[in-house]
Length: 108
Length: 114
Image 1 (cartoon, helix red, strand yellow):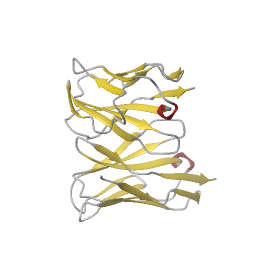
Image 2 (cartoon, rainbow over the protein chains, first blue to last red):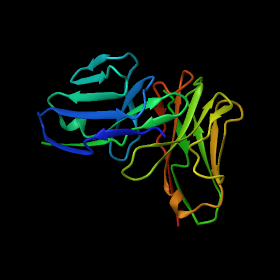
Image 3 (cartoon, chains in turn orange, red):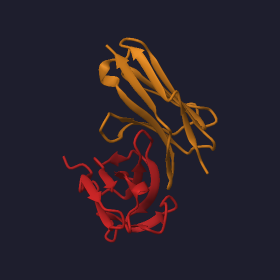
Image 4 (tube, each protein chain N blue to C red):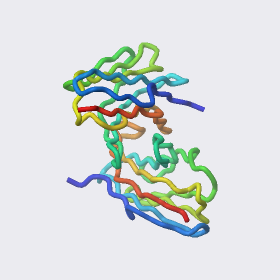
């Protein structure tokens, strides 16, 4: 079946450092979405990418969809303590596969 | 504004009991998903509804799990004869369009089977 893997599984950064998480699918995705889940909370939608090679930015966050539509990345510039949480990529249509997640800890 | 709500928020069941988990999606949202999330893991797809039609239930782990959305709004996930391995957070999400686009999640129901 379809698998969506993310690396790294955990990342600790000093506040102000950059952070990147990578998402890789075993099959081509029609779209990719990114969600953030704070500890004890539920996933919150961040963004959706649909086109091959698409790049979108939200303030300090940059999202990229690979040319083959099988991988994606999320880059955060100058992390802040408010960025703490687990970041999930997800893709699919009627079925929806979440990645394994990257847990980000920001050290003040 | 009304988001996705789920009830109960917490449920403790003795092994062998039946449970029913409710999801109230955002009004007008066509798509509704159920997920199971174990501690430290990502949400695992269980089933998908487009309006009242259950288009995919391939993620339901056994025939003890049953979901319905009879009028295309509120959905119920029922688990019969609960087992300890059913302990998890059950998340419901809805989206405006058909398919899994921009999903809005509820707070989840934490099920503990003792």
